[in-house]
Structures are given as structure tokens and as C-alpha cells.
Length: 303
Image (cartoon, rainbow, N blue to C red; front, side, top):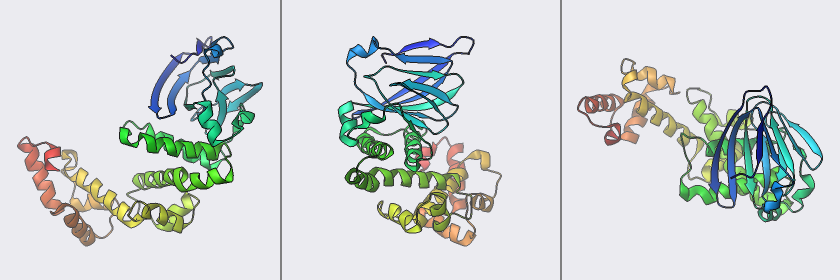
């Protein structure tokens, strides 16, 4: 299927797991491997496949060789490769990686002359490469699978990010900044917020500093979605409380304890916001949830 010659490395435990995500003009593979030696040999490249793209390392170092270059990818590093040229990849220890492949003509349209950089290390010091990694991680998250209507949009964003990583010309970079890079930064900021909902310091300035952008830039990211940072944080905190209150495992906890846990500091404000959003008080929602469970009503029916 992949037209690769895969062999185990002697005296190393062998493990290989591959998940392929097919998008328009793009294939994204999520790889977990250990003790593997993968080769695209001269014999195999006769199949005419000219797909090109990027191998991105997510964990332990591994080695990639192509076009006379032999590079070791550290965590967060990447290398460009082409299926039209012999190459090999060795995973001596357990590790994870992303592999992006697209027709050579598509990549040439994004970055003319990309072939000149085949086999050269793309360092993790590239800020855009980090954005690309986080964006791909979001797309492959089994908890939030990408719906088919969004496939075209995701492909466009990946094209933009890949063009920026590989050094596209100014006109392409300007479009990429307004489109794919902005989308990836917004995704990264949202992920940061969701991990830190319980923190009282989800301020605009703190988020901007962590993501190395200006506060106004963060504001614009949310404005493009027709919302604001404040509304997004409030909505996610309310949704988290709403979920916890109907969870029987938290039935013995007080509502105030749960509200404080997800970052609310003012209980009066929390109660008003909850009632405005859900049409009932937190205690009414908890009681309705528990009564519904007792009567065999599903959580979905309760809202």
C-alpha cells in the first residue's frame, strides 16, 4: 500500500502503528514506530509516485537519509522528502511522527524550487513549524474528529502552514498569514485556554505573551469568528460546569466548589451567567439531571 520496504532492526523490539487521514490533495499519516527500518528503494520509486512532503518528529530522535543527506531529527524537527527519490528512515527507539504527502505539482505551486531543500533539516526553532505540529495534532485528536465539510478548509490551512515552513515567497506568505497561520494560532490559543480553564489568569496579556504575539492580534483572532476572548472563556467555563453538574461522580461536591475549580471567582456573576446561558439555575440543572438519570432519561435528552 505504501510502497515501502520495511524491516525490523536486529535486537530491537519491533512495533509499528499507522493511521492515515486522507484530505483533498493531501495525505496525513500519524506514525508510532520502534525498531523499524523503512526504505523507499530505487526499485520501488519506479512506480512513478512523485508525492513530496514533510516528516515531522514528535518524540525520540530518529534518522532520515535522502539525496546524500543523513539527518537526525530531534523532537519537533522535520525534513522534506520526495517519493520520487530513494530515502530511508530508521526508528531505533519508540517514537511518534507526522508524515505529510501531496502531489509534487501541488507543493511546487506553494513553494517553487522546494526540491532544492530535500533532505535538509527544518529546525524546531521555526515558530511556524510548531504551529503546524499543533494544528496537525488537533486534526488527529480522536476526541474531536474532523467532519467532512471541514476537509477543504483544513487542507488549505495545512498548505499555508507548510508553505510558511518551507520558505514561500512574500505574496504566498501574506496569504498564509491571513489564513492558515491565523487559524493555527487561534487553535493553539483555544487549546491553551481549555487546558487552563481553572486558572484565574487567563488574561489577554498573559495569553499573548505565551504565544509571542500582541494582545491586539489575539483580539483579532477571536473577532474574525464573531466573538471575543472574554466570551469564549466564559462559554467554555459554563459548558464545563454544566457537564460536571450532571456527572453523578461529582454529586457530593458543592456547586461553588465546581465553579471555583473551572475559574469563576464571583459566585453571583457565575449564577447570573449560568441562568442566562441555560435558562435555569445551577442547582435546578443539577436536580433535573439527577432526576432524569433516576428515571432513565439520557444526558442528551436533558441537553
